[in-house]
Image (cartoon, rainbow, N blue to C red; front, side, top):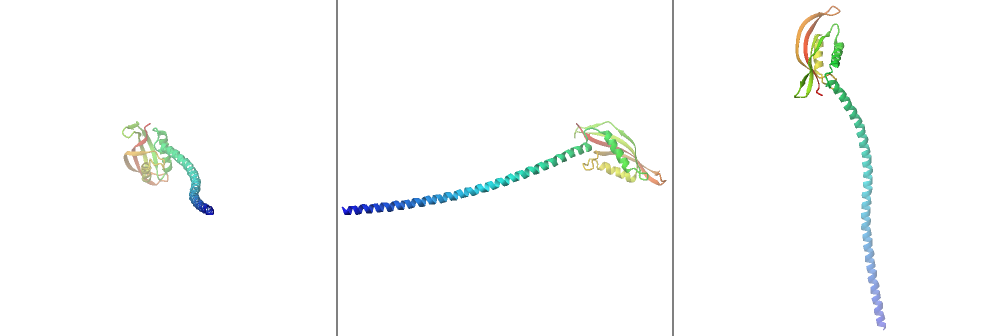
Length: 208
C-alpha cells in the first residue's frame, strides 16, 4: 500500500514537472510571439509615423505648388493678355489704315528736322489683297517721301524691324523703291543732299 502511495506521489511529481515544463514552454512561446508582434507593431507604428510625416510634407508641398501655380497663372494670364494686345498692333485683325497713317506721321514727326529732313508728301492706299495659300491679307500702299540720307536709312530700319512684338510696329515689307538724289537748302541756308523716293509697301493683317 505504501509503495503504491509513493508511486502515485512520484507520478504526481512527474506530472507536475511535465506540466511546469509545458507551462514554461508555453510562456516562452507567448513571450516570443508577443516580442515578434511587438516588433511588427513598432515597425508599423514607425511606418505610420513616417507616412504621417510624409503626408504633412506633401500637404505643405501641395500648398506651395498651388500658391506658385496661382501666382504664375496670374503672371501668365497678364503676359498672354499683353501679347494679345501687342499682336493686335503688329498683326491687326483688319487693314487698320488709319492707325497705320498715324504711325507714319509719328515717325515723320520724330525724325524730321530742318537740317535732317523726312517729309511724307503722299500716301496712296490700294485695294486689299488676300493670300489664300498662307491665309492672310495685306494692304498695298505707295508713299512719296523726301528725306536726308540718314533718315532714309532710319526709315529702312523702321520697316525692317516691323513685326517685332518688342517695338510694336505694324508688320510690313518693301516691295519696290525708286530714288532720286538732289540738294535742298535748310532753314539756316545750309545745303543738304536729299533723297526723293517712292516706295511700295505691303502692310499685313489677319484674314478673319
